[in-house]
Length: 418
Image 1: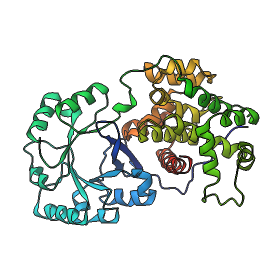
Image 2: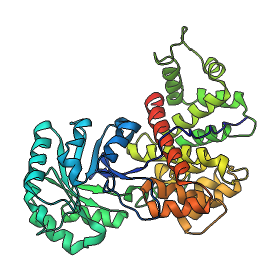
Image 3: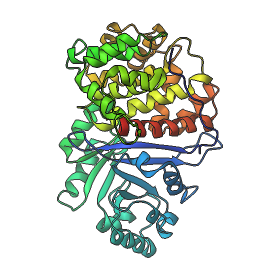
Image 4: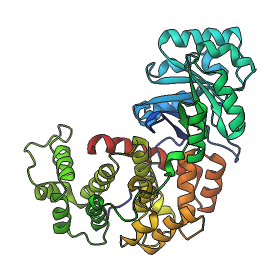
């Protein structure tokens, strides 16, 4: 018996919303830039709310601020009218950063709006800043100044960093997507880094699956078998102290409202049933394996897993378990083990194995279009999302609903399974 993929809700909103992580020097998540646009008519893309000035605020409220921010700062790109209408006042003042976009003039009315934001406790970022531009007048309101690393080049960024050293705001290097760029930006003087460089480890520290993780990987496979051996699952859970603790804590939490305490793994299995047990094991095992990693890496793994599972009824995938495909797409980074070694150590379905290997080699396989869509949607690369969705014969509305539901599910599961 396997875990079934629930249908994507037709009633759910389908916004083009994604987020880009912002990390500290020690690779801890401090916030996310929210990437948003209205459902497009064509492939043109933008990460701001230019076409619907307050649409980004309404969308964040509809999805849930905690789901979007995961308890961190949310950098909300603002059009001029968003500022002038004080639209951000509907969002938490202690977690929202108003990101002033490049096309916003430093007019008296914009300055007054910045004053109002600061008085209310909101923070302000100057997005994609360039020296000598009109928005220099807004620097006195800034808590963060963001420089596009991919467009400016090392020398230009170094000059900017030197010119702004010692200022009361922090410098953020945007679009840092490689380890080499991250190291250079840090040496240059930046203290915050926006991008996906941490999805690419600088080096793999081991050449085999870490001993402490082998049993967890075996458990993941055990609950993904066509016919689940519950005795084997029970044995593997009982011999993992951290998972036993998580399971007992989960089932005895007030949220579930059980009248009698759960005291054994067998009781837990009988109470949960196979489908709920499978879902819990997959989430708790992933969280346990990644407990020493930054929070976004684990959350991204779960979102990818659930997203792949939700689109599985509408895409050809043979016998591959798309939940595991999504989860394992980041497992090499989480375990700091080359993906080829992870695959050799597990009895992975052949098409899924080939797709995971291809994500690193750059090749294409039968399931690669699913992986491509997942990564594009995660990054908010709307042009690529459109192309990938079309190739898979999926509507953009369906893809967006599935992704938002995956975000909501991952947020909920990390709260109840940790």
